[in-house]
Image (tube, rainbow, N blue to C red; front, side):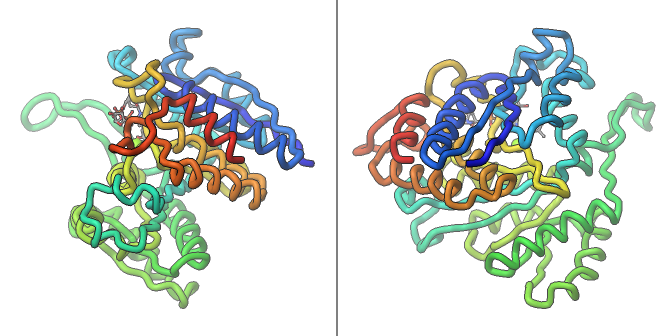
Length: 357
Ligand SMILES: NC(=O)C1=CN([C@@H]2O[C@H](COP(=O)(O)OP(=O)(O)OC[C@H]3O[C@@H](n4cnc5c(N)ncnc54)[C@H](O)[C@@H]3O)[C@@H](O)[C@H]2O)C=CC1
Ligand SMILES: CC(C)CC(=O)C(=O)O
Ligand SMILES: [Mg+2]
């Protein structure tokens, strides 16, 4: 019954392969629930550099701003590794997040029952499943700080500055507390406050905010310990909130606990309902063009789009359930394959999920 316009940035490497499967799933949801999804394709990343010499063309930004939400595959690859920093494919991603005001990145890491064996940790560590939400600050910190070269004590040195304002910290912490209220009401703020001034400001703001959410328990953990605890006892976490770089790193680690980086979706949100949805993985040049990529992260990302941008709860559930169903039927892409299961390619996995919608 609804009409939704989606800007699609397929990007590089496996980006086009996984987004195509996500689009197929959205079309199936549209047919089943009588919604119309229209797709406007736009270029960003390495393919945009090749096409027009710019990683983030103005038309792409305009297409995103004119849409109800954005779906992104992944950008980057070795072909563009020697492009000057300001024009690297990854700059397009940072530019999109910043220009679209998407400061809050939700990265849920869940273990599906059918994939319990794909978790590399001992069964007793994750017995009963795992459901963590990493809330990553997305438009500040060291990825957006001043950087460059200067003359230092030992000659030329490079620098990258980590800076956070109270405003940036408060708005992401607010999101973490709010989302924790809908979950197990536990927020762990991950930082390096024993060294970094920015982390100490995060702690101060978090302590202030705690009184606004008396039902939420707040803890702090240094990031080095958190990386270790994710392997030792991941079930202790509910919501982990952290800076841009720490969230980037910890979410890749968390993904592997669920079986593969090819399973983890994400939603990048700002103040309203507009969002950009993308798998947490990159362009995976090592498997690009081989029909080997797992499309589930991209497919679950459009599920998050239905939930967070369009408030289509049962449609989002239909996607989650379809993914669960194919996994229960033993269907696997190579990254999660084990003896006794059925090996599928990217396209076949997408088709199997469509059939379960
Ligand atoms: N959001 C984005 O657009 C991101 C882009 N990148 C870019 O991607 C390029 C490659 O980066 P890497 O560090 O290699 O990270 P990556 O996430 O692309 O790949 C890491 C490993 O995971 C595997 N993998 C990733 N996605 C998979 C999937 N869906 N199914 C099965 N296996 C999968 C790859 O084959 C590879 O072995 C770089 O240019 C990097 O800057 C990296 C991360 C995020
Ligand atoms: C360009 C990077 C910041 C992309 C990335 O690794 C991510 O967002 O997970
Ligand atoms: Mg990353």
